[in-house]
Length: 230
Figure 1 (cartoon, rainbow, N blue to C red):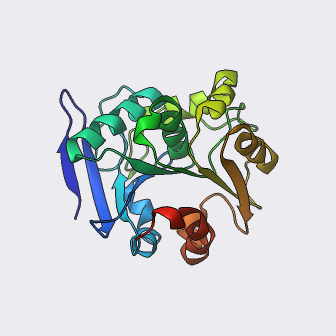
Figure 2: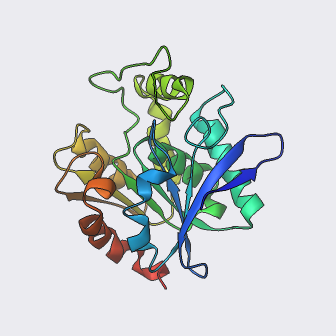
């Protein structure tokens, strides 16, 4: 069952939990246009050993659509959410653009992050080819087109300062890429090399590994997460 957590001054965030309440917390962060439901196949597997907390980022799913969007605002929402839930140390587990939120959190609030998992996170290079930037809502979509537009524009530009953030992420970090993904895997590997405790792993598949191959994905991440597992 999804719960709504009202942050002081807004927004309201929708949160879904799986797994064991006594486990270390995996904070699941979805990509553009998705929601907590994106984790529904993988979360019950990893939840056998962890407490899984999946959030709908602002402008997505059942969370508020306030009309103002950035990675920094999403990072700030997550920080305030952890305070509301009484959680003081997490393992962010970000897919695609959600990985950028987790990456920023780990670089700027290391006191809140025990370890970090980034699945198919876009590197801070300009997207090639450029992402489509939505200009209006489409029928049936479960996200604010303005959120998708802002995040797509961000990815279409180069952000050299974000490469430097990698050196500030001192916690153990696992970057997972798919060997048939549209993302450049050599750049993901380079990002891992810049992190003091970063490692890169490749597995068969495309951009949405956890959703399409949840069992295999669980096997891949298990050795990395084992030190924090119940």
